[in-house]
Image 1 (cartoon, helix red, strand yellow):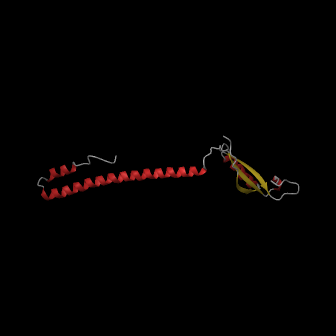
Image 2: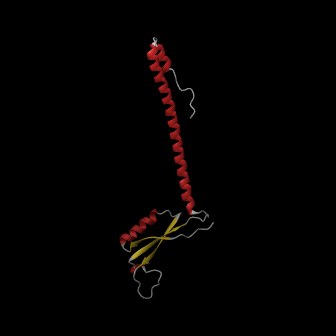
Image 3: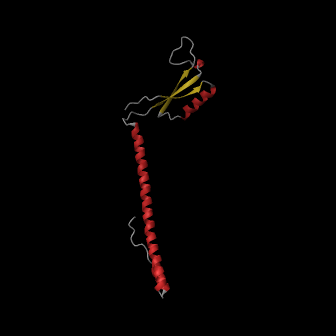
Length: 148
């Protein structure tokens, strides 16, 4: 695989001491394995200087270019965006599924509690052995959980 040249004009800085300090800090913090930085000077050119750039001493500003050193891998850059959206969609689907499972568990518990409550209400109306009836109702549990 060969390296793809992908330089981009990123920004300009003034050709002053502060501007050079900014460039030095950027060069120090830039990942040099993946990117390289290069500059050209811009400003008025005295006669006899090349047209591509201005000499450092005549520069009014500095153009900053950043080259990507990534390898050519024949992958459409939009594929990364689509893949990211696919991953996000999968994560949202998992969250939704987990929420549905929790909702179903809560509905099951709710049905058991409603059944207990209705039995207690009927028992209070009809039972003379209230304590035995309460113990029986409290022993009722969900015996089968379909959602785990």
